Length: 97
Image (cartoon, rainbow, N blue to C red):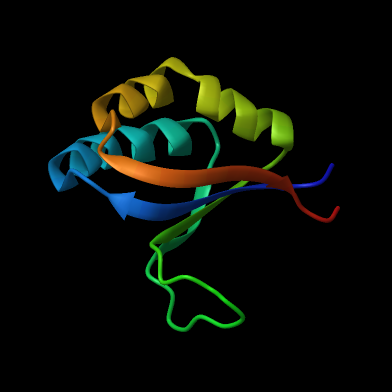
């Protein structure tokens, strides 16, 4: 079965306190759902129209597991805490088997 990667790029942070509240809830919810954080931070360099945005990459054992993590009550509570505190681009991408 192919792994899945949850990739989030932060386009803008409007409320750092809401983002902190989100992070406090999101990390345990996603790890509890089987996610493994691989990347969390700003890019060291950007190329080819790349943007200097905070990026998070989380590995899951499957797309179904990543989707279930997103839809879980714990992660939904984290999203409610975030509210409109950040503008993000979130994707779940299937990796190579």
